[in-house]
Amino acid sequence: MASIFTKIINGDIPSFKVAESGEFLAFLDIMPLEKGHVLIVPKKEVDYIFDLDVNTYEGLWNFSKQVSLALKKAIECKRIGIAVVGLEVPHAHVHLIPLQTGAINFSNPKLKFSNEELRSIAERIAKEFKLLS
Image (cartoon, rainbow, N blue to C red):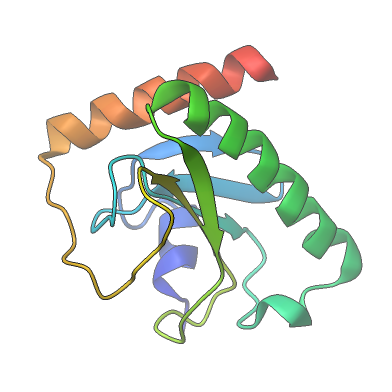
């Protein structure tokens, strides 16, 4: 069965996309730790990040870097944190999280934004991504 991320990639589930290439998709986490929390996934469904082939693995990190540059311009923060965690979705993914303090804590309460707010955040990040491309 396809992962929720594959369903997002295929357009079966809506998302707030911020960047896309032939191999990768970046979209907002709808239950973010911080405003602008982005998930980046390879379009190829592979459960464990270290099982990705070398080209996809390296491409994921390069794409993540480009998205992080756009995210830093779009969302005021001290730094962009990065994490690869969890077993909750069997599809390799990277979290990019704008940081105001020095730590990422996945046990913190998740933030809630309206669809309009999420759309606006995604549009700002996407605009910066296009300017960098």
